[in-house]
Length: 117
Length: 115
Image 1 (cartoon, each protein chain N blue to C red):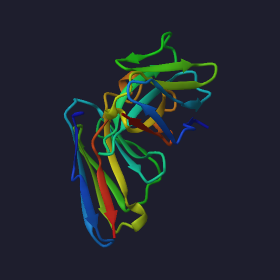
Image 2 (image 1 turned 120 degrees about the horizontal axis):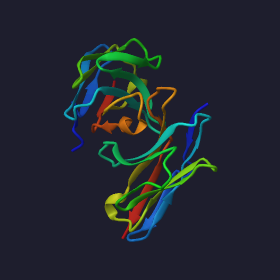
Image 3 (image 1 turned 30 degrees about the horizontal axis):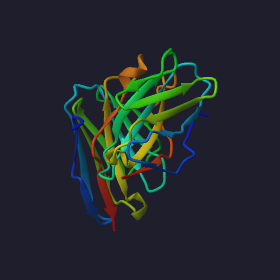
Image 4 (image 1 turned 135 degrees about the vertical axis):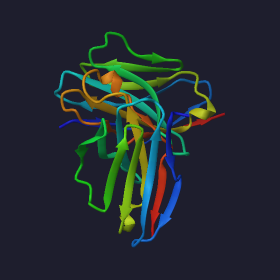
């Protein structure tokens, strides 16, 4: 148990559906991240929130919409996805993003395995 | 450009033996951190070990040690006394203090431990 919980663990959705992925961290961290892991590809950073403010967005399509209502919760809202969006979506949190890199050790949840039909 | 390279797609080791997983990195930034993560088939990414670019000694965490060779820009993970539960995907990653980016990951190495 890493202290980062993701729900649901598995999700199957059609291209016209709207769904949301949820991430919750119990570590008292200030930064949260969404990563996408596709088959045979390195993890790709999607979004970073530090102190509830989005500080990085790696040119992710607008069909992915993040929300960070507080430092413990992070959502990824999905709408009109494409089959190529099928992947493992991982959430992570860390103590801080600037300064001491050691404080940026990221702790991950178990991921949501998404299938878009 | 910053980059992490893991050249071993798969590694095989017998139980109780030691194994080294290779990682090389590329950055011109003098301040950076190197991380290793383990990802079992369940999907969760588990933090194993961290090495800072200014750390004088190689990092160790239980059976894990990081062989940090700064001049060669390598940060190999050594797992001693392999166990069946070590079978997983292993990722090397880098963080750059100045750039302020999140982790850059390599493509990973699949480790299979047999009895």
